[in-house]
Amino acid sequence: MQNSIFSDQSPKILPSILSADFARLAADLADAQAAGADFPHIDVMDGHLVPNLSLGVPIVDKLRKATAGFFDVHLMIDAPVTYAPSFRKAGADNITFHVEAPEVKNDLVGAAKEIRKLGCHVGITLKPKTPIDTVFPVLDYVDLVLIMSVEPGFGGQKFMADMLEKARIVKPMLKSHQKLEIDGGIGPATIRQAREAGIDWFVVGSALFDAKDRKSAMASMHAGIAAAGG
Image: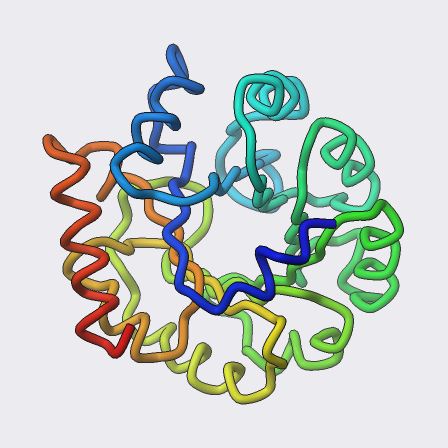
């Protein structure tokens, strides 16, 4: 496992490929990284756990062959443990699953252990309406907690600032090697307050990929992080 990613204490900006141009996915991701973004965040949706379909194992596999570096894969699917081996084989370095997923909601610890057996890192996440204490029992078994600051399913939604309270609650409970991530509505106007709430990794979609000047957008976001204390 690429533990150096988790031992690195510097904040990271993760381009969400859901907002990229799928006709030129690898090139669009490379362009985002050239502008200053870090490693990709890959959203997988099954149309059941969340109201949308996105991409599957073949896309991750093809992107892995075209792209070096860490892959942060977010499984918004009913059966994350069932499909985790395929995504790991395709190139996932971290696999994050939802507490609401029917397959795992009665045994979150068991699910985290099963995914870790694949030799990858493990993350846990929850929808905005799910109480943050739902993740508490599994914190000792994961490397990452992802706070959803929009309703999962579609890109380009408005940032839900009240979700930062979840970040403030869970951050003191995490160890130094564990990361706190946020996804949804993050951009130049919101990244500072997210950093101030304790976020380490920032998933950015439309604010980066839709920007006319991606380097300028990235510079604005890095400035927001710096204004929050780095």
